[in-house]
Image (cartoon, rainbow, N blue to C red; front, side):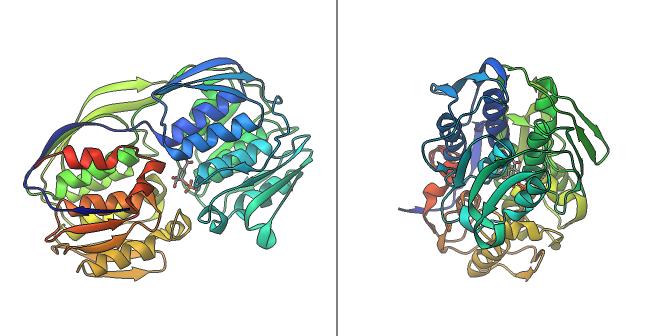
Length: 426
Ligand code: S3P
């Protein structure tokens, strides 16, 4: 399928963004391992989170799904049973990595696999420490690529320094640590999203965080009803749209603003965005608020170091903001972006160059010259949801029409994105 999109004269509206993807995965996974029933309200019914539900069901967990909520019937941390088939995670990196921590050292065999993008993504980063703990896990290409096969083992304590600032890796190890003989101690290089630590300790797990060090002791967990806030990664498309459009004013509701996720807000504020926050609320231990944002005069900036993990998924859309900012924007220390659903450095640089922007590709990022514009043309999402939506936002401000090939990739995290884009503004 292709969409042909043209720019809009003005952008006004009130937007309720989809529920947070990271939190939806965690809420259903952890409650499936808990003792007791739980209702997860405002659950993201995107393809990735539905993959998590189908994997858990294959492992014997009873889960009921209605239009926007999920009920889990957990029977405890050791209750999973041997599946009858290969566990398919689809396109979801969070599912394959967190489930690996959950499946390590179980008393049954099973295999996790996914689509062609998942099969290219690095898995040795999780397999290596899990095997050091005593799991018996193997995978293709020297344990680098899915399918990943689990063959029992007995988990023991390790002390492990994470080689990359990855919340998926950290979470896999925390989940294995809950079931290992003496827990686990993990050191992070830089802070990555902390939803796992927050939610598990809220559910009664013994987890302590001291700076960049996380200590987990073997624990059972209790079920918790959870309401998921809106996803800041999905909000980021509208945040940038409002800033770069010449006549825009948007209100975005219930945006999760956990500090380990809100790097995009700090960067947009630094670039000069006209942004206000109100109606702060607590969603099951996660802060959220409404955001008012309008047309802004942006300046270029540098995004680097420990800021990168706090906005890792927002770099493709921030790169678009940089095209419309005064001066240069430099994004470095972001090589991780090459190992996401696609190589997001190369694909972002390529589509922007093709659209007439001046961008230089670096191994770990890019340098974008500001004060440019975006021409029209035909671009592919390459099956990557965040690139599909970045192209959609680019169409709002492009000189000529933008044609997006494979736009439906956005369903992974944002069902309804294109309908909202169509309805918004004129
Ligand atoms: C996620 C963590 C991030 C992010 C991904 C979701 C999570 O990946 O890119 O979209 O839910 O833990 P890494 O932590 O591996 O960088």
